[in-house]
Image (cartoon, rainbow over all chains, first blue to last red; front, side):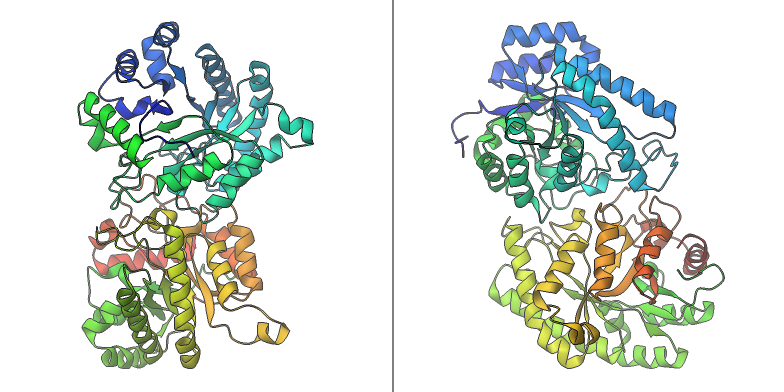
Length: 295
Length: 295
């Protein structure tokens, strides 16, 4: 297991963490200033700044990506909606390539219409089938672009409105279904389908240790995200905790992830009304301190 | 699958649903008035009213129990705390017997100290081991009393502070560990360990259909609870929905449960600031209407 105590070289910042304080160009400048070498930017932030400007700025600062956020949201009320989602995912793949991302993070989508308050169906099995079909349809474009899709299982409390892929086992089953392992040679080739393992979404799972090991064996780990689970949690969406302020044993989880051979970034992703109200500089310095001591 | 359309004979009311409106004696009277034949009362409500009075009132109205709420909460900071929990569970078992309950509902407990805001350990595997040991220690007393323990897996969003048993598979594994099936004769004897399947806690689970069938095969289904999952959910604890107001396909789930041969009550359990603010009579009549149309 790597020692993070004296360095944050292996830290990435998911740029939603300071999205209320700064636009993306300023976030990149601030990251460069404090020695954060990787980020995971969101599509809307990139669009606001202009993708060519962002690409040039990243290059000038020698800052890389740990992932591009995000594709997915495959579930829709009708065929036209599902096609729109596919088309939008194709654009997301192209943007991920333009920014040199190692993967496109994929958030499945929930029950059709639920997030918009216009529920179309209570059939979560059908929603899951839509997600499978959507990823299947996207695979060829992803292969052509050599841009891996990192399926991120979200916490079950988001099953209705954001993602009906809710456990690591389920995400890995989906990967195995759509991109089977057929032999030794295949195992050594680069995967196009994998997973993003986020501590917040997965820490509670009784099968987590076994499934992280499986994800390693099946060469699926594309990203590792950290923050913390607060007690009490006062908001389902925007009350994630700074690492160390909650109940997740982050070092143990990182140990499992790194035992598989994973040597990528640990990406800090905190959606928090409390931290969005702080000065951005203070958020970044706290993230770095906690990354070194608690992750 | 039973037809609930013209009758609520198979409905039970978890008395927390109207706990802010009425004390338990009034709840029982109101249930009798509207033809609710079963309830699941809470220990604190019973203690406030006096257990002998409650037992006599239930008998006078010919109202039965679908479960007694609740035992468990086995996790604690030290041995003394764990022993206190065992002792308290023994008392809960005796109370369940005095009230003629078919089972004692068991909620595991979370990380030691978390609910009180004094976290002692982030080791959720150790908390799970404490729960296993606590149930194991309680088993003999439960057998002597012939009072089954219904382990209720809670939604993963309660893993930190209320229950570290979070999936039906995990609860069934625990049952099989502590009370193995050894043969045909054993399968036909009455189980002392089983599960309570609550729609709110389990609806998201991709393995739910398979695990409900397994629970049936292993003769573990002691209780079935219903309410609904709202989008958005604005409070982790007290924003459960009235059946039909949310996204859960309750009829499908009940179909799976009844396909195993389960013919017990469907227990309505709604913790809701919104419904606690309504007149109790309106809550009961709405529960009955929705029980007939949505469950």
